[in-house]
Amino acid sequence: MRERMPIQFGRVSSFLLKLIIFAALTIPDAMARGGGGGNSKVGGLLYLIVLPFLIIYAWYINRRINKKKQETERLLNTISQNDPAWNEPNLEAHVRKTFFQIQEAWCQQDLARLQSLLHPQLFTEWKAQIELMQSHDERNIMEDLRINDVRFVEAQNYQDKEKDIFTACIDAVATDYTVNKSGDIVSSNTGSRRKK
Image (cartoon, rainbow, N blue to C red):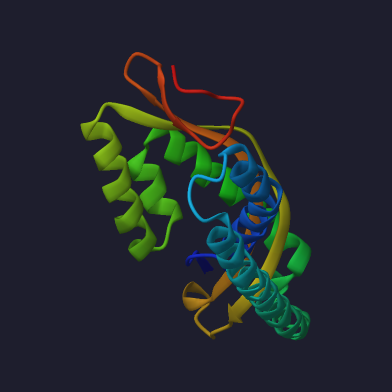
């Protein structure tokens, strides 16, 4: 059975939710500290206009994922009665194990291992990203990686088991940063890792 790993809606909605919370907590304070620096009424108005759309979009994406999850769970329950490979707890264990293998191979820039784990289209994209990092003598590092949730959003069962595919939406968090050849941090997703 081969799993597809497209761009995940969960990552987008989770990011948008975090962005909304960050904006709600910092923008008014930043405008106040900035001493006005222009027309703060326009910035505040723009903020009030954009924020509801971001909230609605995040809600909409999450709702779509959950709807697909419910449909897929029903399908998995039905097909797992005749094919134990589709048993949802076993699939989830497989997804979790494979996800960590993929992230480890990514951080090690192990293209051969990634090619065996990823859908060909995704591998092509990741290979280009790794080659770009290698050309700059950089490497991505992830620490404290943890999966918060796995939601199955698509399953396709065929008579030929080699053609079976499923899609899982994985909600995960990690401390994620990039280092250069000498180990200096060149970019980071967290304040706990600062550029030197």
